[in-house]
Image (cartoon, rainbow, N blue to C red):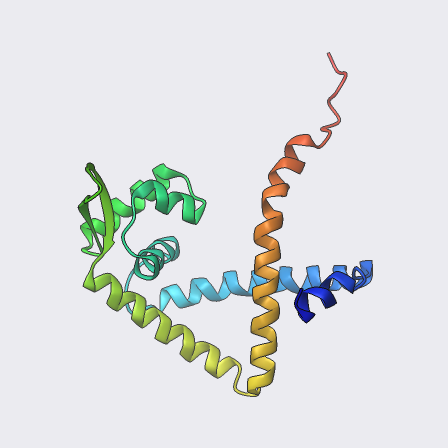
Length: 177
């Protein structure tokens, strides 16, 4: 077992006060991101919706894949992916190519135009973060990146229980006729 894993296993659970403080901070961050995202999209060089940008980024980073695999990766409804792919194909951002393993199926492939848009998006994001973090040092950036990555991993593991809990929660309607 690594030292970090041992330290995490031995660490006491956070207090309710600290959990509430973190939950409030994360909620505020999500709200700030939502408002900032709207402004960034309004000033973007390319007219690509946020959800389509996520889809393009996935294809650029992970390579060609079937629509079903893309929907699974993004945890999105296949009909939503299909609609977005149609729009991106019309804009010359995505091409459908025959799957070499199964000619009846097609792979979604990011075009050179999509890779350029993705590259511009990454540069814009880095520019904004660099300006925002101008007073931070490398240690603070690395520490936050490490903690956010850990938070994301834990959230990813936990989020599947959210739906189960929702369906198992009493509604207050039990026993009514």
